Amino acid sequence: MSDPQGATAVDVLIVGAGFAGIGMGIQLARHGRDSFIIIEQADDVGGTWRDNRYPGVSCDIPSHLYSFSFRPNPEWSRVFAEGREIHAYLRACVREEGLEAHLRLNCALSQAEWNERDARWLVRTTRGDFSAASLVIATGRLSEPKIPPIKNLDGFGGRWWHSARWNAKVSLVGRRIGLVGTGASAIQILPRLAAEASEVVVFQRSAPYVLPRGDREYSREEMERFAADPGTVTALRDELFAEAERSIGARQRRHPDIDLLRQRAVDHLTASVRDPGLRRRLTPDYEIGCKRILFSDDYYAALQLGHVRLESTPLTRIADGSGNAGAEATSGGGNRVAVAASGNSYELDALVLATGFNSTRPSIAGHIRGRESRLLADEWSNGMAAHASTTVHGFPNMYVLDGPNAALGHNSAIYMIETQVGYVLGALDHLAASGADALDVTAEAVRSYMSDIDQMAQDTVWVQGGCTSWYRDERTGRVTLLWPDSAASFGERLATFTPSSYDHLRRRH
Ligand code: NAP
Image (cartoon, rainbow, N blue to C red; front, side, top):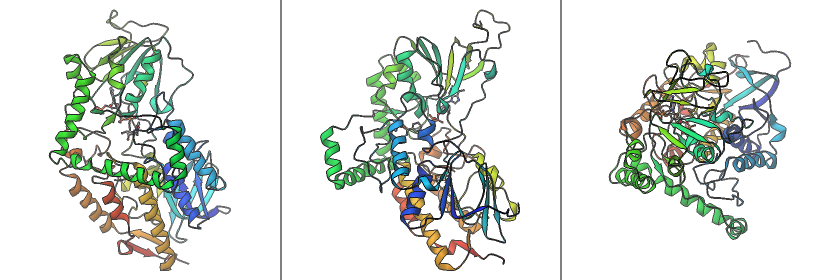
């Protein structure tokens, strides 16, 4: 790809205007680095909080922790804010931090290629070409809906959609709905779905561990106190962070931490579900924490409503309408019979697939070419890997936020994003001071970091817990998405930028 005439030149090009892209933009602006743009393929900012509009969407990390430390919000209406309030917070961040002038909405990356001669990235988008000294990938890991292999899904005569692409045009009132999945999204959806639908069937492939959530509204007095004394917000945030950090011992399978945590979940199940048969079917067959622990005060209650059924095997197919007429009847011009692995079949008007995201193979990696035109997807063909969870060998001046080994199972993702943003600022400062034009992390630095990750992960519940999860790459079983230790240790590890891990490159003319 030759450098085209007319490419708009910027110092930093950020891809994605979710929490990570917005956080990066705010910090660049606050550090006087004004030459940056944020491209966003959608028509609005907000990332996952723009996309997820399912009934009941909210965050299961307390809002005073799940927000930028440098933009506290005394106005959070409740302990666990709903999705639209978080989305509004992000929009306010963009507006009040002056990011609008840097934003290019409806602007999708087509291809990014490193140009060795100029030591710059050439980024082709649906709204023109850009030339950038540095590229920040902030496209998230929970943005591409995963549709499981349900045979004949396209033959379903009712409507179906993914939880992150909610179809608000379809009324659920009086309808028979199948809810597929029992992850963090599904358990928020079920209570709202059950309030409207005439019948709900929950297809469960694995029973989740559920802990009480303890949500409540903040009183006017509390909000006034937060606003009057910002120190109280910081103190609350620190307390919430410390509380979340205490749960890392259980993930590392320390005793009694893991036993106490498991017991809390078992007690919640016992107190919430009377029928021993149902309780058995709702008891996970893997160790607590292996998959994300869920928080809910109304999931079990919703499951026990008269018109809600738990099908404790996965949805495998939509009946094809031929044969088995009794069990596989059709209605309304298409086949509406959903068949579970157990053989049970259900006639349904709509299917909601709360089946998660393609996290381990981000599609953007197929659009980024580094040195010698190497494709990021090829570099990651055995799973995502990066040094400091942020930089990839052969992709100079490129930083991936919220990508490899930067997710958490026990604390706030925003802390991780802020830590990475700090690391990128350190790299940019070092680059400016060094006189070099580009930094390319060495292959050895990446190898050594990944080997540390493998070692940290090996005795944790994520590897030893007897489950599958999106934290691990399905090709190798390696923990490639999750940081398998405390959040604080991630902060310590990335606190200083280490130039010796990088080759310093110069442009060729
Ligand atoms: P997820 O955790 O990946 O859950 C997908 C669910 O679909 C799993 O229960 C999976 O079962 C199930 N599934 C897949 N195919 C199925 C089939 N054919 N039949 C029945 N079940 C099937 O996805 P998610 O719930 O959307 O959550 C993804 C991530 O988003 C979470 O881990 C979390 O990080 C984030 N999230 C956070 C919040 C929050 O409040 N902070 C809310 C929502 C989402 P298996 O478990 O057997 O694979």
